[in-house]
Length: 77
Image: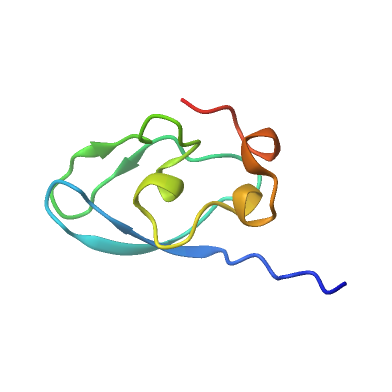
């Protein structure tokens, strides 16, 4: 069985202004906060999501990609 590589870059889209920024995701922790580089609003995960990448990114965080689900990632906010 082949292991699928984890993607470490995700493009976040601000729900307030639509600004997009490609960021490298941390592999050792979830990122709960992200300051939009367009409008400065502080993004937080949507209910049920573990991080801003799962809520606003094009690619979910590394633990979710690896198939860990909620148990393999931080507890939902």
